[in-house]
Image (cartoon, rainbow, N blue to C red; front, side, top):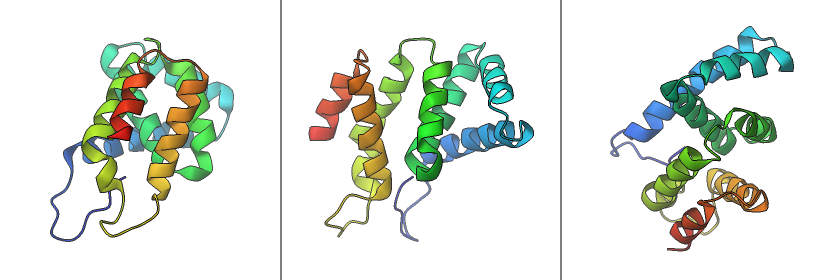
Length: 142
């Protein structure tokens, strides 16, 4: 998720999201790419508030870091969201404010693949007319 050098300390947010993503990958592995089973498992995991936040984190991490399955993860995100993307927008706002510059090499002149994936997700949320995505857009423009 973040571009860190050897002297940078590990990022807590990235660590938590990576753990949640591993749980999501386990669901995908156990379901053997059977979409119905994946949807059922995700629905079951999202029954609690903590489960919902963990799966949302995992799917955001997947969308941003795994470009090959980004569309699939976006579809799953729209299936599991219960709060009209409020938690998702909150996490994206935090990511835009605190982590967006760290998602790329300090001397780079182009956006990183992770930054492009994040911008693509925000574009998708704007298309869906999600409430709260305007704050994410403002944070990205800073």
